Image (tube, rainbow, N blue to C red; front, side):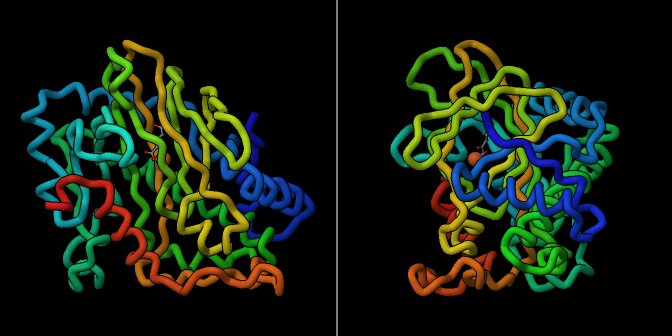
Length: 313
Ligand SMILES: O=C(O)CCC(=O)C(=O)O
Ligand SMILES: [Fe+2]
């Protein structure tokens, strides 16, 4: 069982006894497992249902239609990724999944777009009525929930409760829809063993299940589906930021044979040029800072290039 955290207590950015309780639970979860679950988000049950319905409709289209918004046409890593586009583990074949990625839909007046930044730009959307509105609303909701979790994390790290807010006010988070087609032989890997690149991942999965997590020194844990629940994990950038106090835990997807599975991760990432240097509270005489400061976007770019076939051409 993964620990359950209530992000809503941090909404007002005021340190209350409830904030301290949740921050302490979150801290332990991040140190010991790197994964936890979240309920009491600002998403309604209908919004969970709507986003999955949209994902089903999107992936049900013919391949040619989906390829009109191929990620390979985007200078900003947005749009449709066909089966085989991503290989999360170098040890196993490319992942047996298709994806749709979006971020904040930014036009030419945004300074990052003008500067030609990879992380700021327009989305590529399919032509459905309501698609843009539904995914953008979901993105907004997940961003709020993610920032509430970061507020708890800030408290647990002895930082001001609103420490992360200005670092995410021009965020580069990515919302992804994933369809795993039915696996028919054991050689097909839905999602290979990997860690996530960034800060925090907030995942909605469907009732099929299949997500498995391997905390340090423990066996694989299966993460069961529960309605209205998000599964959250620490990514490599946050592990680095915390001087390895928090764990970015390996995970994989092993769904039951022969069924379609859908999941919707939200990768919460800061503004570009966020300087990631060990938090003071994570550095002690016995555990000096292990990492050079790095800019968040340089880190994410290097990780993309390792896992995407089209970026290696
Ligand atoms: O589909 C899932 O349950 C997990 C997906 C995942 O780990 C990822 O895309 O990074
Ligand atoms: Fe992942």
